[in-house]
Amino acid sequence: MLSARSRIVARLMVVATLAALTAGCFQPMYAERNDGAPGLRDKLSGVEVPPLSYATGSPQARVGVAIRNALMFKLYGGATGLPPSYRLMLRFNPSRTSLIVDPNTALPTSENYGIDATYGLIEIATGKQVLTGNTFSRVTYDIPGQLQRFARARAYRDAEDRAAAEIADNINTRLASFFFAGT
Image (tube, rainbow, N blue to C red; front, side):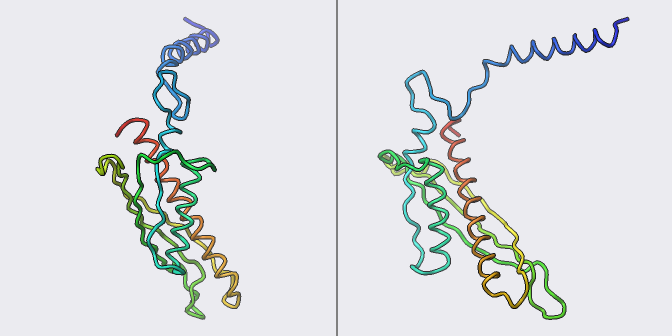
């Protein structure tokens, strides 16, 4: 019968062997390619994100700018993109729901801010839509006292920004998956 130490060594050998056999199967998504094909960063930087068409000065316009800026930073990494080969079309609907209501004042003390977004990736050369998708974000924020109007407004704006960043992250992940796997 094998000792406990021998069984542990045998298991570690099996794990090491499996790790060695599968090590060549993985390729990091954002790694530079050696075959001359453009890498994922290059493909993502070729996506144009046009300004969203919401009325100037509306709450949707501010959130749209936040989504667009966050998405452009994720796609281009702070620099401007390459000449576009794709255009990302984006529409969204914000929502606000009271979660907890103070029974004494009948005013909300906690709210939920949400964004439901629909997007489509259009190949500029052909005008063909190559990808469509939906995503959503829900963030909760507290209203710290009914007499603190500025705190409520600031909490609401922070919730909008967090939801916008989450939407941008979801879309960026989906685009990266599309360009890397082709699906």
